[in-house]
Image 1 (spheres, rainbow, N blue to C red):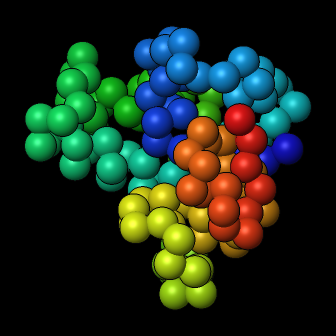
Image 2: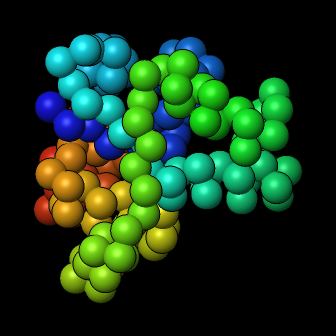
Amino acid sequence: MKLLVDTHTFLWLILDDPSLSDTARRAIRSRDNEVWLSAASGWEIAIKYGLGKLPLPEEPDRYVPRMRRRSGIESLPIGEAEVCQIHRLPPIHRDPFDRLLVAQANCHGLVIVTDDPVVGRYPVQTLW
């Protein structure tokens, strides 16, 4: 399975937060799955860190890539194809980062690992 971890899923994974479901944790850690973190999630983390809304042990430009690699997660760049698909999504979610994750999942055949029920209302496969 090809998985795209939502931003909160990534943070809960690296912080060993009990909010992360056992199903999500097992899927992310399974060697049978490809696991991706969107550059959009890094962007979202950096914005929230810069606003003082997300404390991290170090600055996100060092912390996010190091923890992503440590977790065996690949980086998914933001491409023109995904950005140009966003207009086709129904206006279900107001969060632009989540809308971009949905577009990336659709373009690349990925399952989004999220507990956000609003994301699940899009025509995209989710796992939690």
